[in-house]
Image (cartoon, rainbow, N blue to C red; front, side, top):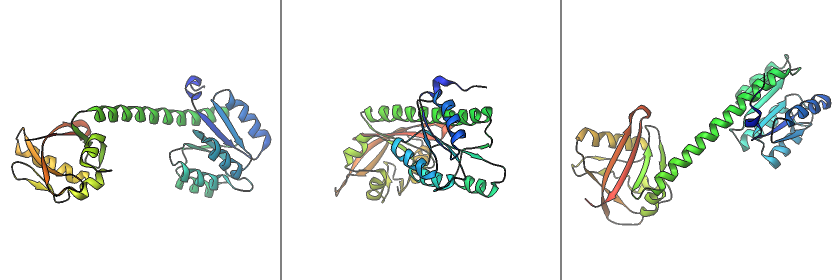
Length: 255
């Protein structure tokens, strides 16, 4: 059983193990499959290596001198919560495993390490990294699309504002949606007189639903710029992507 080496070659890995023969043997195995492999003899060395190189994946033993594996993982998760961590463990380390679960460790491998087990765990971590990378690329593409839109635009879900284009914030003089919402907390008023306080994306969703229930094609909102005394009218349009509960929200100056 092998994982796709051309994919794993994109990533780096840190392996921490206090037994020299185990560490050296697995490092040789991993070096043929990853862009870079860093090693540590205990948790303190491992943490220093992580801070220096920021590897994509971490594999570590639990019981080690100076600093044990879980102390190291806790420190790593403080630095980079999403870094995949694989724990190697003996059968009699149940209390350590419970602590590892609290730390959101991704995989566990029983010692002595079997090649198939390490490959399976690494494949899982590599797949996670690939999926995360794909999501980051898609988000950058969406952000670029939103940013080059000549209208004010943002995406909103039932839970939060996903993306707001810089033109929207820059035009009104705000640094964030939260700052914008605070200044416009008195509510968005449309041409039909509907009004709702806008403190959060849930408030935005409620307001959007009110517009939708109104059944009109054209809606006007009055928005205040940062430091301004008066509000300005804007025509608002939106598109719902129903399967995902996402709304694309756009504004244009004028009535």
